[in-house]
Structure formats: C-alpha cells, structure tokens
Length: 278
Ligand SMILES: C[S@@+](CC[C@H](N)C(=O)[O-])C[C@H]1O[C@@H](n2cnc3c(N)ncnc32)[C@H](O)[C@@H]1O
Image (tube, rainbow, N blue to C red; front, side):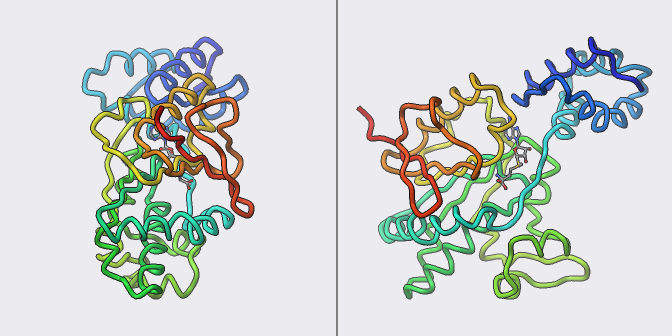
C-alpha cells in the first residue's frame, strides 16, 4: 500500500494527538512499515480508509493498536553507565536514608518492558543489603507506566528472553535475581513485587499519581514536540518532591524547557533537581 503525502499528514496528526509522538517529514517509512499490516488486517485498501476507520473506532481498540505500533520500546537493564553511577553513589543512598523512616516512591515514566524499574529495584536491594538493612526494600514503591500495552504485558510478566537478559545485566545479577525456566529468565518475586505497572499516557493529567522521590523519564520526550516537552516537564515538577531528582536519557536536557529544576552534575551524569516550591 502506497502512502500519499495527504495520508501521511492525517496519520501523523492522529498519532501525535493520541500519544504526542511527532513524526517529521521523512518519517513516512515509519507509518508504512508499522501500520501496513494493521491496515490490511482491518480490510483497508488505502491508508485514507484506514485513517477513517481509526477515527470512527469508538472502542479505542484500533487507536491503541496504532499507538502501540508507533512506539519504540527499546530499553535494557542498567542503561547508561553514567546514570547508574549516579544512582549507586547519590540517588539510591538518599532513597535508603529516607526509607528508614517511611515509604519512598520512584516513577519510571516510560517504563517500556520494565528493565529500568527492575534495575532500580535490584540496585536498591543490593545497597540495602550492603549496609545491613535488607528489610528497607519493603519501603520502596516503584510505579512503572507506559502507553504501550504490549510493552507493559512483558514488564508485568517479569520474564525475559535470552537476548533481553544479556543486555546490561551482569552474570552476577542474573544469577542472583533470575531463575532460568526453559528459554526465559524469570525475575524473583521479591524484586518483582517492588514495581507496579500500569498503562498511562503522559499526555493525561498526573492528578492521582501521588508524589515521587525520584522520577526517571528517559528516551521518551525525544519523540515529542518542544511545546509538549515543556508541558510534560512542568507537570513532572508538580509530582516530584522538592529537592528530588528527575533523570533523563544521556542525550536529553531540560535546558530552556523547565524553570522548576536546577541541574547538578555528578561525574558524567546530569540530574535535574526540583527546586523548593516558592
Ligand atoms: C525508548 S522507550 C524508553 C524506555 C526506558 N525509559 C529506557 O530509557 O530504557 C520509550 C517508551 O515511551 C513510551 N511512550 C511513548 N509515548 C508515550 C506516551 N505519550 N505516554 C507514555 N509512554 C509513552 C513507549 O511506549 C516506549 O515504551
């Protein structure tokens, strides 16, 4: 099926409206490669017919399939060494200190298939054990959210295939936290229980999420327009407790986007700390 420029504009608008993902001209191939099969399955002879069907779908099922297909779910355990150095030397020790007197909450705001959230849980467990307070892990609550139901299904299952398990995870962590079962690796119940996942669109209101001691919002805003990024980071500032860090992907910055944060550099990692409320 050939995508015309009018069809590209319509579908690009549809995708951006429903998940914020912005497709620049030149990304026509993304629509063609990711949506053609779904269009055929839905008995559409053209992308225009497909767009009309998606617009008219009152169940939301087709919309969700389109959004799912247009997301890029690339992730792996302990992604970006510099960030995890900051986590090990600064962020998690601070969370442990707070956990001694009550629950601490971490948000993995584009959790994909769960590796980021579970990396936090494993590191927290390791450092809690190292300081002789393993029970502090019970005070850690990780909220993992993503718009992709398919990605979340894997996150919730906490089962990883032989390729995913090799990406970013040391042999030591793999044997300590996972059990091999046939061709998959199953995460321990204890680490799994630290993270709760749910479908959530970052375009939606954050009311009801509660307040967080740490937010990871990594490699998702790169797909959004400046105006949405600004709005998103401002709203993240609203759910992050003052003095607490927001962590982005290594190639991302808040420069010029959000006044409610100040940057701090630890070794080669920049964290964005929520300023005290005025
Ligand atoms: C590249 S992955 C990043 C995963 C992880 N944060 C990491 O850094 O390894 C981006 C994720 O953002 C999700 N995403 C895209 N648009 C979203 C939206 N509007 N709301 C919530 N999640 C979204 C995608 O489904 C995808 O799983």
